[in-house]
Image (cartoon, rainbow, N blue to C red; front, side):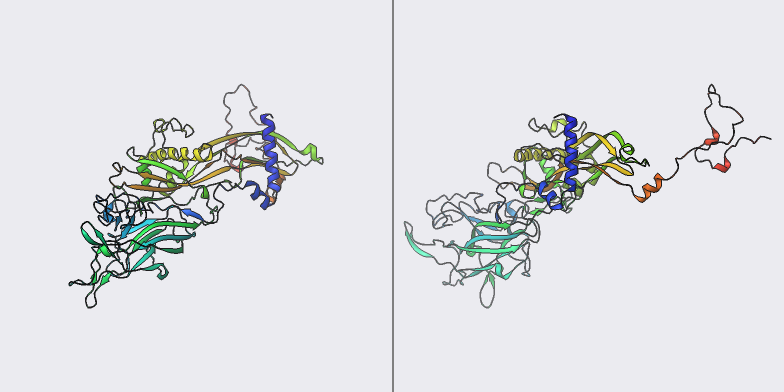
Length: 551
């Protein structure tokens, strides 16, 4: 089929689609559900929910020794902004008289409330976030809990008060509590076993399971474990020793995701959000100023590992709202014959589509006209990402350059999943044969095919071969650009003239002033002075230089 015929077929399809019922148009333009996303309820990955990092290695083969390994270590990714200084928990080693979960580990909960008992202690927190859970989703959180296995927890006798007692354990979602989210952990019961060192106390842990159900009130809800009341004593209250605190293990979650919100325009995408560890990111230089694109800056650093994950559930293709392109032709012909009165014309229609992204919109609105990839230069592109077209010069702003470098990772991840390269911009030309009936107007509209890609960057620093908890940054972002998967819809439209246009058709053709008699100075073609002061634009008729009347 020739190129001209292809274009005519496209136009015909566009007109037919314009006449279909709304339900049929939606069905024809709907994208199939990506594989594996048909389930009503799906798993939610919990970062280090098994508490496998870091691994603790006891120096003794005896299960009842080194309950916490060679030294006490906190679980990775369960603090505030990364690092162990804010994580209130200790990893319990694997073993029969330790975690008693086969080769899996557990964590002792040391997170406490503030002195007034209302909030989480900012320096003693054991929390994570359920990444990619959106506001409105129904979530079910499951975890297992058990009393301590540390035999150094004081018991009654020999002048010591009883600290081996039943203790409450709460789950708080975004800092909020609910009585149904609390469990009572039984008091620890130890056995006496015979060892080569004599009789010692040891305990084979029995784990119980708890479930918390809630509706997410924010994106990426925060889940925290806390001990609300850990005191002993009758007359005077003293805090229970950490060795007596209960343990948790196997934290997992499932969600019933909220439906995709397709109401946002490409120029008003969902705001980008950046996290450092489990906290909203702050500026690298102004530590008290929020920075919604901090992770993009970290992604641009060569010392960090950066990858993009496409969220297929919230990514989709769609047709943009139709918009007119080119001129409107109006046929004011008054011929009796419809056929002879029709006007025929050929015109070239040119239109352009470009990309948008939520990071530029939330932080640098002035970059919107430049497109998401404007910060790219040739040296930023790897050889396998040739479709991300670089600019001819470096970005005008350092932040814009960081966004462009991060976009390379996005483009590569998108192509890997969709098997089509991302298209940053596109210019299209159409040669159209136009037929405008009598008393009608004709014009061309385009409904551009676009792709919306939702996902996040995960930027990880060095862990020094597994010896330290690495810094982790996450950038949640939405891209919106021209589609390579679906063709644009181009509509050749015509309709009756509006009352204003009909009134215009009935007016006389505008003419310049024509004198009733010959001018005094006849027109001389050889005269190089072609300026006619009498027809200077804007000159009132009453003030024009009129030739004198004959006497």
